[in-house]
Amino acid sequence: MKKIAYIMHVDWRWIKQRPHFIAEELSKWYEIDVFYIANFRRKMLVPAQTSPTVCLAGFFIKLPFSARSSIVKFIENRINRRTQKKLNNSHYDWVWITSPVVLDFVNINLTKNVIYDCMDDVLAFPQKGKIIDLLKRNELLLLNKSSVIIASSNDLKRKLHVRGYKGEITVINNALNRSFIQEYPYEQNQVELVEKKFRLAYFGTISKWMDMNMLERLLQNIPNIEIILIGPLEIKLPKHGNLIYISPVAHSELKRLCSNTDAFIMPFIINDLILSVDPVKIYEYLSFGKPVVAINYDETKKFLPYISLYNNYEQLEELILNIINNKYVTQDRINVNKFLQKNCWDSRAFEIHKLLGTRTNGE
Image 1 (cartoon, one colour):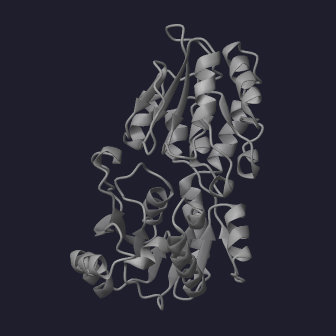
Image 2 (cartoon, one colour; image 1 turned 90 degrees about the vertical axis):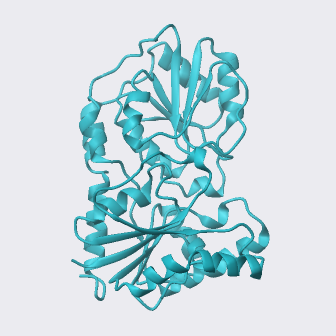
Image 3 (spheres, helix red, strand yellow; image 1 turned 180 degrees about the horizontal axis):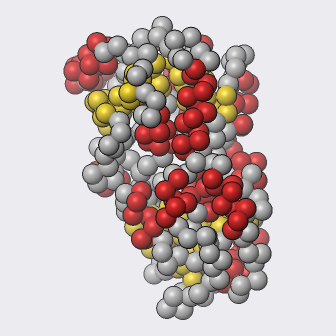
């Protein structure tokens, strides 16, 4: 069985997302050693998140300001020396990298078979100009040294070509865990208000890309609406009795937490970062058999007609009121089921396995 050094810029203990799922699914064909960047914001981490199918081989610590201070950089290198040695001294057939961020403090041999899985537009995150310049250089280096390049969305592929990369990029979208389809019933659900409250839920990272102004307006204008936010919190939330925050939970706990939810929402602000996002959460939302509303952009249009899209607050409020009053167009659960069956992480991993089989030393 061939071995992959799977280097994640996301903490393995973070809420489960693309790198976690792909690593686990690829372990059907490869021996996966996961190396990840440790995040020390303990309140944002999921407790006891392990995997029976991959080896958590080690983690790297990223110290603040190490990109700007040679002294901090030296200390960082000393701290990570043991993990770095383990990575360098093990034989791997492939090296999987999820972001150019890791090139700044993980010493990786880019002469090996490198797979770059571009899951986000790293240059679109808010950061200082010097950091962006460094990431640009690292991204171009990673693109030019990689044997296989994967993008999670068509917009990401387009951006990488615009930035100067002329080679082949394979788009492999996000997906959902097949257990979601098995666990959630495909029944036609009419909204039944629990304790006379309409529960609108969001799960995922709660950050600057959330349109909190729209959510506040919903709370002000629609009586008895309750908005539930589940996940790592990176911003200050407005104070409102019907805005409920729940800290990160294990992926398997989402079923219990969302069992009384009436609808789901993806209330993002459209910017360069979001335009490249193929939203994992919408695949997962659909498995619950509840109405889903999301901001309208190219990467959410693929979910039509199974979700409802809005362009502004007025459209969003109208959609929510229609759901409350059972005037929305109900989902065709048979076709939703077919759609989800085609968009599971095991199918995505099989695409990757076939792709690696066409490349040198990757068969």
